[in-house]
Image (cartoon, rainbow, N blue to C red; front, side, top):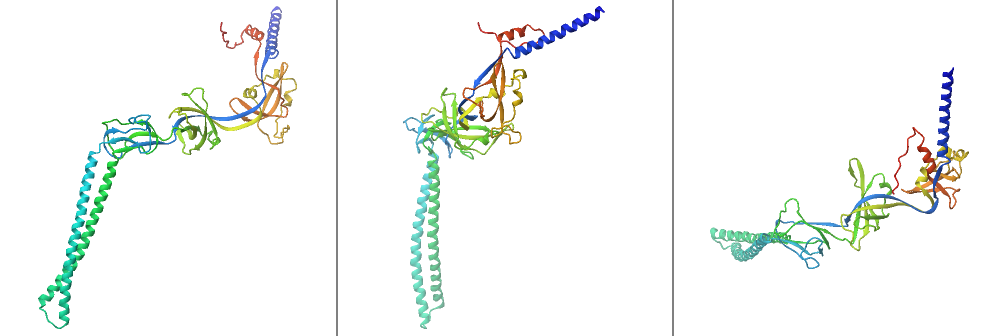
Length: 440
C-alpha cells in the first residue's frame, strides 16, 4: 500500500512539473515577448537585376603586319613622343617601320622591267612602220602586174607569181606588226601591275594607325622580326575612343527576359570607390555562352567616360533597372516573412485571414492575386492584415490594401525579455541558445 501511494505522489510531482514548464513557456513566448516593428511607408520602389561585367572600349582595332621583316623604327605619336603604351595617335600616324630594303629592291626591279616593256612597244611600232612601207610597195607592184595582164601584155609567169607572193608576204607582215604592238603593250600592263603590287607591299613596311585613338598594347620592339604567313601577327592594339566606353555584363538566362534596350543602369568599379556611374543598355546580344550548364547572355551598356577615369577591362558591379513604382506603400520583406506563434495572435483574429481579391474584397470565388499577411502589434498580441503584394526587390515589397493608414507599424520580428531569457536558462534539459558575449 505504501508503495502504491509512493508512485501516486511521484506521478503527481511529474504532472505538476510538466504543467509548470508549459505555463512558463507560454508566458515566456507571449507575455515576455517584445515585438520589433517597422513603419509602412510611402515612397518610390525600384527593382533591379544585379550583374557583373567588364569595362570595354567601344571599338578596339588590332593592327598587324602584312609583310615579314625586322622592326627598324617606331613612329611619333600626337604628343611628339615615340609610339608606346598609352600613346595618343591620329588616323594615319606612323606606328612602326619594317626594314624595307628587300621590298624596295623588288620595286626597283619592277620599274626596270616596265621601262624595258615600254621600249619594246616603241620597237614594235618602228617595225610596224617598216611593214607598212613594204606592204605599200608590194601592193603597188602587184597592182601593176594585174593591170598589165588585163591589158593583154604578157608577163613571165615567174615574175607575175613573184609580185603576188611579195604582196601576200607584206600583207601578213602588216598583221604581224599590229600584233607585236599589242603584245608589247600587254607586257607593259603586266609590268605596271607587278610594279603596283610591289609598291603596295613596300607601303606595308610602314605600319600606320587606321583610326584616331590610344595605344593600349604594343607587342613588338625594335630589332624584333615579325613573320607574316597565314596569320597576320598582332603588333598594336588601339582603342578608338575612350571617351565613350562600354560595360559588357553577363546576365543569367533567368533574368534576360527582363532586360531590353534603353534601360537605365548604375554601376561601380573598385578603382573609383564611392562613385556611382550611370549608363544605358544599348544591346542584348543573342549569342549565349554556356559554362558548366549555366547559360548567360552578354548585355552591352553604354556610358560616358569624358573624364577618362574608367580604364579598359575594369570589373564593374552593375544594377539594371527593370521596373519602378512611384508613390506606393511598401514594407520591409521581413514583415511578410515573419509568422507569429498561435499564442501571440489576438483571440478571434485568425478566423478573419481570408484572401484578398483584385477588387479589394474577400471572396474565394473571384480571381486570386498575389497576397501576403502583415501583422499589426495589438498590445501583447498581434492581429493580421491581408494585403496584395506587388513589385519587390531585395529589401522592400509593394503592398496594397484599403486598410493601410499613415503611420501604421507592422511586426518584422520579436525578441525575448531579459527576465524571460534568465528564467529560460535555469530550467534543466532545455537547449539554450548561443549567447554572444558583450564587449567590455
